Amino acid sequence: MGSTTSCCVSASPKLRRNAHSRLESYHQESELSREETGCNLQHISDRENVDELNMEYNPSDHPRASTIFLSKSQNDEVPYRNVQEKRKSLFINNHGTFRRKYSSCSTIFLDDNTVSQPNLKYTIKCVALAIYYHIKNRDSDGGMLLDIFDEKLHPLSKSEVPLDYDQHDPEQKQIYRFVRTLFSAAQLTAECAIVTLVYLERLLTYAEIDICPGNWKRIVLGAILLASKVWDDQAVWNVDYCQILKDITVEDMNELERQFLELLQFNINVPSSVYAKYYFDLRSLSESNNLSFPLEPLSREKAQKLEAISRLCDDKYKDVRRAARKRSASMDNLCGIRWVPAILS
Image (cartoon, rainbow, N blue to C red; front, side, top):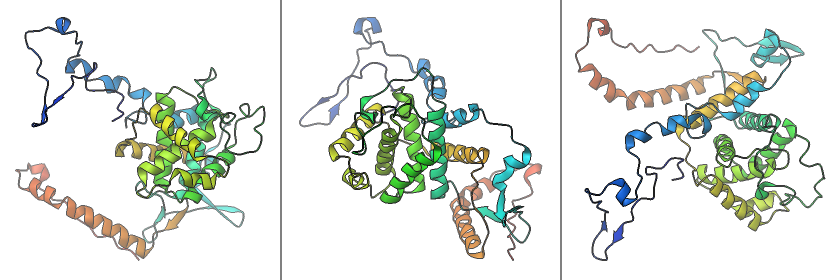
């Protein structure tokens, strides 16, 4: 559903329904050629590399395509930083001085941020920074502007929109406050923030539009609205967003959601590989911009949880390893895998 490439280039033949039988499939006459039938259906060998050709243009669909926000952040001109300033994220502020946290045999420092359970606060900060780079480094010629995202035509508040509302780029803090307010009021998760960024870049790619000072709020709102419904089991209703944004109507939210889905071509699928790519690219973005994730020592309780998760994965793949051992092995593979328990003090 919503895929950028379809299995058939031309319209597929319709199926005839019988009242007393199942769907009867269409049988093409073998003696008729393509020109006679008027069907210019491509051979499958001609369409094998369609995804690879469009990969760089669809980062929200393909895991090997680089994300747009990361490339825009790398193109941003920043002043020269020395090595110590680049590694500021590895330091903590302790009474006005910086002290680095080192892991040792007895103490291991970990950040409370994983691909399956991201840290909510820092994930929202990274997503807001990614949106900031989208707006700051947008194309100079400008893309197509749609009325549904224009804040002048569809304001989010009753306060008068300034005449130069589309001339000044918002600061990162302003974007963060807007996203944080929605996530805090709707009680959304960090995973929803990552999916929001996926939908945002998918919209920019599919609709060929740019996110700019005059439409970024409504684009982000539509992405959050859709991501919360797709990701969370108990989704936030459109009327609930009207309680958060007091001056917006339910009809406006419904129309925003409908047009957002149409621009996405109803492609709301987010593969796990694409989700993981966006997560790790957000981590790379945070490291290059000194957004430090909080480091905490590995406690005994957390170590037991990690050990329990590891034991579940071990049991899951135990049958696979047992089947592999039955096969003949060469002299290089005589040494079996040894499981060495970790000693935590």
